[in-house]
Image (cartoon, rainbow, N blue to C red):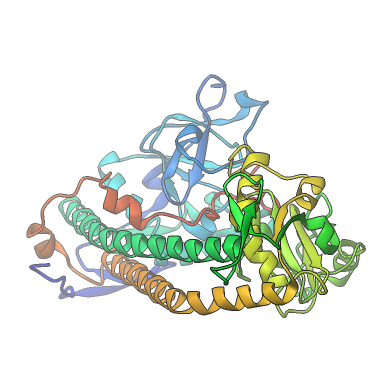
Length: 472
């Protein structure tokens, strides 16, 4: 940038949930004087909307990710118009969303109309900033399975507002920052994608040809696989596993500090287990949900929906039970190595089978019998272990580069988050910096990239097993 933001000359103390100081010339106004709550119902013909963190409030048909869809009682849903703000059931985690499309949305949401539309762009940034989201915790009612932002209380709080010309400078500056960060993130995401393709090529070769390139080959008879070593066989998961255990048809109750961990489909991606997104339950729930057997080290977690076909080794953690749409497979160690099974699930034979079984849909599901029939290109267990070792060895430098790129993306997002927080709360003056910058269109791809959420965005629960999932 040609001009860097600077600190304001004069700050004065304010006692607000999201900041303790503001520039002296910024006004303080009560929220309810800026926004009018709307509860317009009786519009069943309007399109359904989805509240998302990555795109704001948009028509469901514009948002590719699966959301829970209302099928009746549409006349009870609230009408939201472009420019309105929406407080969803997850706003305490991700902020208040700007509405971009006209349509109807859950009656559990709060729809706010701006009294002065000229302030809209500034608040679309402020309401997604870290200080504001942190301050919203003071206005939460209920427990996790019913938490919401209490607008009646929130509306009586105050906001520090810059003059309109300064708001425009802030919006311009923030959009430029998001554009720059978005471009950097996209470049690193492309690198990660290319490395992922390289990893998959290594896995594909090892799982279909083995490590001995001179051995005789035969037709596998499987689509997408072709030739395999002559002494290998095509088998099914149920032939090689001691147990295939399905979850119950619902998720255990959330019990804070319950001491037992509920594993959800969101915890398993690309062959890895991540604890983030799980929640705790108590021994009573744990005992009920592990009546068919508790997962243990050496088992393989498997998701049969949302999305179908993700797998990972069960981690070295005690007290694990499964949430809805989760399964685990227990390989017979005499004939099947656990690491080899995970790789096989992501290999060409299983992926083709899963795609066909789910019609290629990210929201398709697999039945228990279909999971047992997942094809595994089998070879002797010693050879399986050698193949798994080979893949791990070949992947090691690629994983290191991916980890570094992911860390750099995280740092870029943190830089942006901190900078925006300082700008919208008046810690930094960007008027001169913004004047030296070109205009950035609000729908620039760079802005979209930096807001891209993981497919498990907080405003939409993809696997449907979250106790707080929206019903509309």
